[in-house]
Length: 241
Image (cartoon, rainbow, N blue to C red; front, side):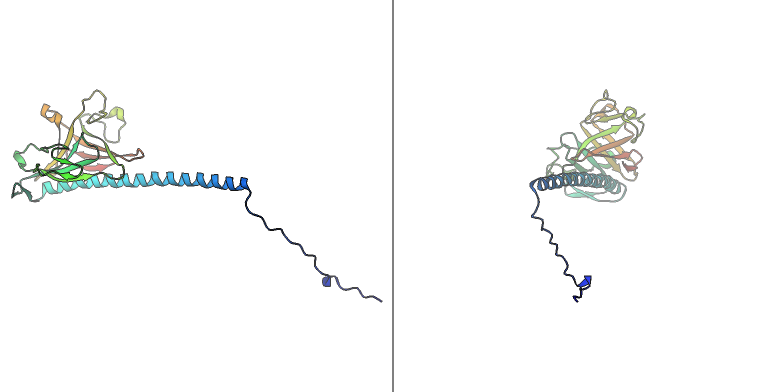
């Protein structure tokens, strides 16, 4: 009598899976396109975020430059000019319509009797490389990097709605695109601080005609178009938007 082996002794049937032979051409094309799209979005997002960060850093550096001039103006910071030192000095920042990639710190060495202006211009008192030796008032030149620029600078008139107000409520005289558009343009902007007061003295080429400003605004812009505003009020308050 033949005894049948239990089923678990039966030889298992072997199944072999065929190995995948690689990507098909259409799969490779789809993967390449998807990788390209994702990479593009990552690069765009990175550029935008990094541009915003660099612009914010620039705005804070500009505000710190104003604060430094103010600190020099109200303290006993000695200025060496013409071979002699003096403490009766007004310190300020100068913005020039001839160049939107720099601004200069200056010292009005005549103090109270001075004109509260930078006696020089871009290309004469300073250039992108720094102060020119022929100008005794220029202290330091700040150069904007990474494609950032000064979009415009403005003297703000009485009746302005405020830094955060819509453009229709602003009253500015700027080196370009004044608000309203009927307002004249200006060639330069000087913000000076004179000891012992922390107040800002705001002047442009229009000041010679008796025009008075309640604050100064500097608009900085990144390579991707984002903007920040640094404002200095005549009372000495410095703010950033």
